[in-house]
Amino acid sequence: MKCDRCGRDNPDDLRFCQDCGNRLSAPRVEATPPRGVALGGEAGVRARPPAPEFDFSPKMESDGVTCGRCGTVNPPGSRFCPECGNNLAEPPPPVAAAPVVNLASGPVAPVGPIVCTRCRGKNEPGMTYCQYCGARLDTAEAAERPYREPQETRPESPVARMPSAPPPRPEPPPPAASHARFIVIAQDGSPGRQYPLSDDQTDVGREEGDIQLPGDPYVSPRHARVTRRNGQYFVRDLGSTNGVFVRLRGSETLHDGDLVLVGLEVLRFEVVNDAEKGFGPAVELGTQVFGSPATGRHARLCQRTIEGVTRDVYYLSRDETVIGRESGDLVFTGDPFMSRRHATLVRDTATGGFSLKDLGSSNGTYLRIRGEHPLTDGDHVRVGQHLFRLELGGQG
Image (cartoon, rainbow, N blue to C red):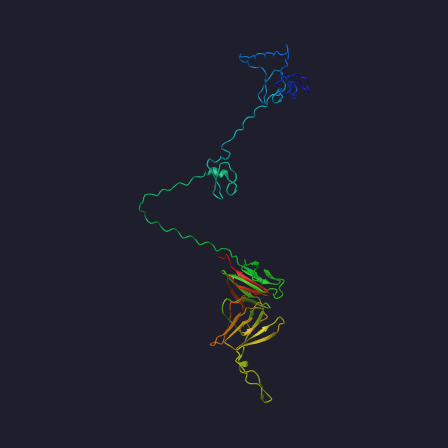
């Protein structure tokens, strides 16, 4: 087979030229003559095929060139391997010596399964990450401390033993950090922004303090202070204009000058003094004044308005006075935040004092605090137009 590049004749069974290594084109196959046509001799007489020749003599070792890439023995004088096209003139590359590995320096691969330090799952040797939790496996540490299957403990023979000393009592855990917070309650009752009470003292104000409410015009610059002592929280009014109100949990004694918040109504409780109780029939120009029958008056509620003046005055002449939106002795039909029967004021006939109690209203009854007031979990504190709820979740 003749090479298209260098023109050398190569045997027909070669695929690459022996001189230049060029890939040889496939030999052209001549067309087979049709049947019945003799290649030579007379027409109609079929030529006898030649008998095959077999060489049964042992093959002698060839002195050809062995390819260093594929191992094919090539005829002497060949420059390129006809099988792979390798250059036979170049010597085969020397075999690189295997690196000597110091078995003592490198980490020893663990024989047993690798136990994950995070989830304690068993992994196959050679794995880099845990197949259960994805944590990186420390193969060196696992090799030094191979995992051992837990051995089954067999019960010992019953032997009488002396009672051992009781184990020491575990020390109580240290108190957890306080997670108390003030949560703003919206008008619909849903919780809003949260303010953590992480320090022993937290001030609330419009311009100063840890909790600032700049958009509330009824909050003083520094309005109130929340302190923590021995795990107990207290709230104190810092001389604000409108005070601090706390929602009642039960019955609370009223004092002269107390402010009561019922719905939207701010009512000042005032005790009637002895001079007012001694009024007799009025006389004008020697004639008694005609009017409604006189009744006993023990105290009064003065309606405080945003104008800073008193609007309506309600005298308390009964031993119990109910305040509500639809039913009661003092009815405020235009107050949407007041319940049907909201709160009651009860007079103690023995002492003459009054107490205030909420009647299970939706929005509660609030009383302005005097001095420092203790707080418990779930208490509602009103500062200006902001209503806070104290939560002591997670406190130790």
